[in-house]
Length: 281
Ligand code: GLU
Image (cartoon, rainbow, N blue to C red; front, top):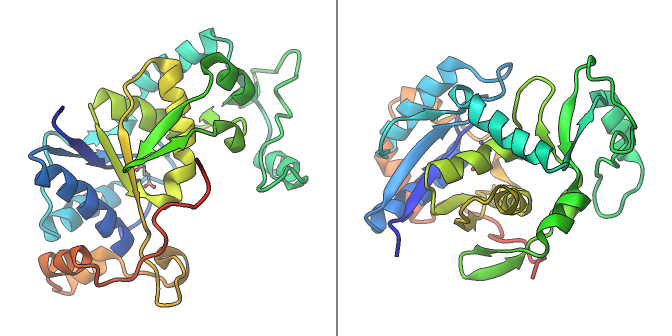
């Protein structure tokens, strides 16, 4: 079996909190327990929200928790040409369309009923000729993409999940303000870095349907996923949202013992919610 390669891939748009620490530890320990590699990737394609001071704090937080990573810290902002190349390939397959909708227009389009949760209804998909002089994003024509590759599955731990990317709608692959979106950059980088096991929170479970599809379209290797439960407050509510989870930097700066905190996280001292949604195959 190939050596295990995992990664922690934070976006430096704010301070890390306990939930990030938990995720980083899960990814780190999975690699270390198997003699594998643990990589650190900074997801800073969002030039307006990413801040260098947050990157410095991430590195300090991880070291404080006693985590070590292998190789260079990869920064997505330095790899934009790779995302552009992947985007070009998808465009050449006829699977992308430009979308000039403003945020307000997208919000309005999504407020119409579409089933279980709001989806972009493809307003720009049928435009004969888009005005490319206007700021535009590039969206994936999801129905066409799914038709091209056919049914797909992916593995979450020992479960086999039927991919359902259609439920995510025509996702954005290149933003108006950046040559890639989260979905595209993550997919390209996980393959380029040889990641075999993607360990991340269950909040990104739905995104995996899209990532699996992009891998099939781009002919990329398919990792295993391990979506873990999110830390919660005692009431079961996700920690990050409601409870103002303390920033790791604040704990670190007031002299708390990061390694001891990591041990408590490993021991399950903090409550967490359901690990995998009950829907899916
Ligand atoms: N950068 C993403 C985040 O901070 C995580 C990416 C991933 O694990 O796939 O939420």
